[in-house]
Image (tube, rainbow over all chains, first blue to last red; front, side):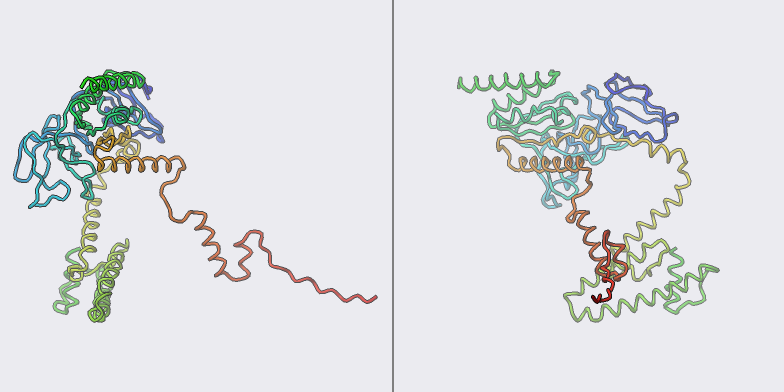
Length: 239
Length: 223
């Protein structure tokens, strides 16, 4: 191992030469790393991370989404076809979404989606040589929270911020949820959809999420939440 | 494979006994196969005749027959099922399974040799996992709070329970939930073993077991 976890790596840095590592060492190569022949290289610049027992990845700040199989993302319908929708997922190429890939959809009962509508969908195919493909149900045909998103408000965050919202040690969504009744969908492509009972609630949550990308620690984030909730209460009193 | 099949079929039908383009060990196989096909047909006739009379169990019998047949066909030594049998409607699932296995075998034969030793070794050493979901064990991104969307909140609760269960399993080092614990299973089988063992073997099964010895007879002492 040429680098220790916590160090900064740049694209092209050789982390491990597999020829000279002992044969019992194992590596699970996460995002930001790549194997070329017998070397493990970094393909993004960022901080090398390690999770026991042997998962390695690079934590980087990014705004451009690269599709990965299994990711739940928010897409915007940009074209309607006879049996597929074309969906913009913020990647280099639009994805396709079959009209039959919804819960309970048959040839006769198709979902009604218009151009510009939002869908929360999962990537079934994400391959560098192929068009990405989306589905709005799990393998058993149930929707499990996927599907069209109606009304609400869409914001776009940097990818690392969107990921942080979903990790266990960043309870921002829950902290807001204690005071505000709202629902949200966080796509790993950086898009976040929010719907509150009133416009003020929606905007409060949206502002909190957007501003939270500047927070560097959990305490800063808690401070931010307190201030936003106080503001919201103040606005509510004025009415 | 297909040739062999058609050969067997035709011979069984008695139409072209002479048209067997196989020699040596293949012919030996053929005999065994022919016997099997005949046995199969008899078996099916035997089972299906009463089955038509007594309908409720018909499906059950067919299902069990299907599984028996497919397991027969899976064995490494491979007893092959006849083509006609596989085309029958109730054998469709077994048929698909066999086709898939054949394809896999073929693929292995074609490309197996191209896999170098180095590829094998490094395949074991590294595995690619490009998803943040897995690496960071992220939560599902659809959330609802304060009873806004009960359906989503139910999903959230389920996910939470799944996660808690998984961490519990990881902590205790257990892989799966079992209805019967290992301890119970062991004690059950020990009692069963004891039940069916001979009396003189019991001392090996139960530690600390010693057959009661009769007290040696003592001579009555006369005073």
